[in-house]
Image 1: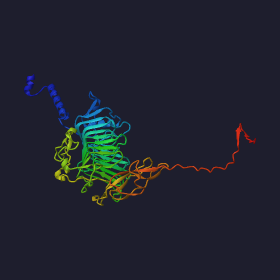
Image 2 (image 1 turned 135 degrees about the vertical axis):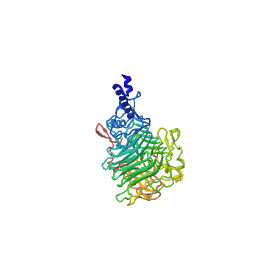
Image 3 (image 1 turned 90 degrees about the vertical axis):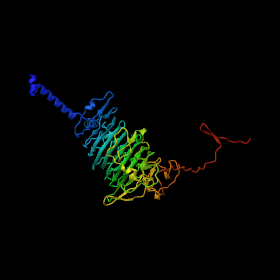
Length: 547
């Protein structure tokens, strides 16, 4: 029977069913089996929590795709902060430009990330945030002091405008961290506008608290990293690595990092605006062994008629520095501009908020400074990005820093410059003119034992300016002038004209009032003494008799 069936070319029913099942299984395998190196795009809604139920023998969790990464975001934002646990990437992930919900959204209620996220050298592409809900924006929103993000590359965009009250902190890796970000790179286009107390934007982190960013770089191509506001009470900070550093509790450090591209902080309502190649603002923080290779940095603060009247400061390393800041061994590209077009930083640098100059010849197509083989760096080989890259991360594919090529920049195009609180003028056609204000430096007033508050005073460098009058009090002590040291002699009087060459701090000098001396009354007249003595309350007169 079988022989006849085979001869006629017709298989038995049972055999046909088996073959059909095999064909179906092969089809399923072809659909769901990923070829080596393939990265499938996330659809923006699917969620897979299977990774969380299968930790490794060492307690580590591994995420393989966008659906699982989205599940991590949902877990953390519901209160699972992963303290003491490690989450690893097992593959590159494409978020496919779908709206992303940052991992961790607040400092309270455990809804933040406090574990270790190890990217294992993988890349997350297609990050996209256009929703202004919440304050913290990035792949991660809020990372606390026990959190670490490492060995990861992220690319994508964060673009939104929020006209409602509320601060915003945006960064390519994290919006806010008081933890550790290390061995990471980011190419995230950031353009955010807000109306709350702060708008902070950075290539790696928006706001750094008492944490550390080390061995990281951001490469910003095309449009600048941009922080904006039209609310007069909003302060905005923009930096190539971190928007704002405020390590008032425990200190903060940015170390062995560099950035390329453009940075801009634009205030359209006469408020505070700070921009720097590495950070816009730093207080109680350390920036060490960093290089700002930006094409330009820009900070403007304008009134309703587009005149630069507010507080705008920029610098090649930091836009502004406050108490407790340490800047050590930092460098900046000598050809950097402080406008988008024709304004190089002036000559005469010191290693302060502007860093020391480094030429294109010293950085292009070679390892330099701390970005060397021993510290985990290698030379990039793409034609438009021949700069150091981390060995553990893939080479940038779309990065363009060709303006640093000595062929394009003229090699050592500038020998230096020092930034200040210069502000640009915006023309009626909204294009920047080439004129700027004179360079200014800050006078900081210290109560030196007194109480009260005085704003920093900006004075033009090399020109006489009148000091503000003292507004501090100190009990009954009298203010007699300003000293250059806490226990120093009076150097300047209230309202005196001074000429400064750099930032200075003046300390109030107090004199305690002399104690009052009470009046001494005139002695009263007394009768002549009576010769006698007191005996038990009786007075006995001594009678002198002549013998």
